[in-house]
Length: 224
Length: 121
Image (cartoon, rainbow over all chains, first blue to last red; front, side, top):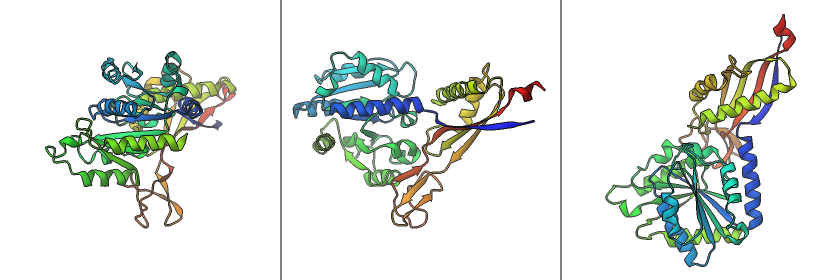
């Protein structure tokens, strides 16, 4: 009996990776900085985004957001109150966003011109596992960790924390009541992703937003 | 839990590649999965049984090679293998390492097939 081995050497996510590369080139050509926000459900992606969109808009930046959720358009409605263009993507059970969805929604979003934007935020589905494998063509992947989740989250989800470029600690106004050990959380993040920039924020009080918004503006400027 | 969609993509890719080998039977499908890929090998295997039903891959074996994380250590000036994914430090000199060289792979490596004329005998 003869059997033979055929080498395929092909990425399982090749289609997604190719679409993401096309999107990345498209975003770069349009001069828009794209950020992919990832975290567990309930970490405060929408709250961070709400304040970020308002803050950037107040500074004269042109911003828009794509918001992923399994169901409901609650987040998009919340964010629309900030007065910037927002579009909801319902994944209907899929636990992550894929590059194809981003491309399709941008194509369908006729009123939105990418080259008229400085920032496009993508709020991923709340999930610290699956979204880490899916490139969306973003320039910066931002992972969020709230003080209510525990300092060891980076060690429990190393795959996601390692794939991120920047980390944002959220709900810092609750750090005291939660006995949050800030140093330990930062140490754990650095253990998984040495040297990653970490911002400490509270969307409720606005603490840390000056640094966060300044960082975003700096990144936008340096890349375009 | 995106293992089923990944495996469905594997089945599609392998089925497409079989067009070049008419009548061949698939014995094995070999994957390369990095230790930092967000998948569980056992779940991939479970999904494989379901996803291959009624396809040319039905009854074949899924082999998963898990690749350890490899980072480049600047201090040692060489690539080093990590023993786990809980700490991104060089196991030799303990320096933090953020230059990932291997560990995120999600690839179909190869397939093992039995040719059509062999099957007929």
